[in-house]
Image (cartoon, rainbow, N blue to C red; front, side, top):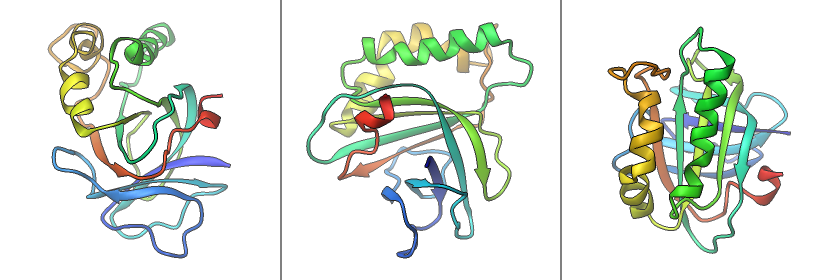
Length: 186
């Protein structure tokens, strides 16, 4: 079974199996199509018009129990072609270290894109987190010194050594059930 992240203009159809969570993207989301879904499927899901899906190959993950509703954040990004494996490993290590420095990150997962469905998309990585509140993402996460000193350099095209293409999909929504579970972090 493969976990998929879907960016779509609509909610999933009622006949689609394996949906873990889906909902409208909240204000402040950029680069999506209005809704995001998380699902498990053996093959590429049937997608509505204006939707794209990526299959995830986990790199690292962490699980922190959180009861009740949460904010599920998904960042889809593209690492530039030609990035060396050593530099890529450093980038992935910096992202994976964020939960050690940012207390509002609950469960999290960093994945490489293992497959695609829908229109061709450039995404190479998916960085996901769950938060107890939207302020945990829009405040502590985005304003944290670790974010700015260690992670933002990979994304800022004006910084020598940046490796992430400018086009991103940064979407977040409410989710009642957990998406990033203990099983995902094993």
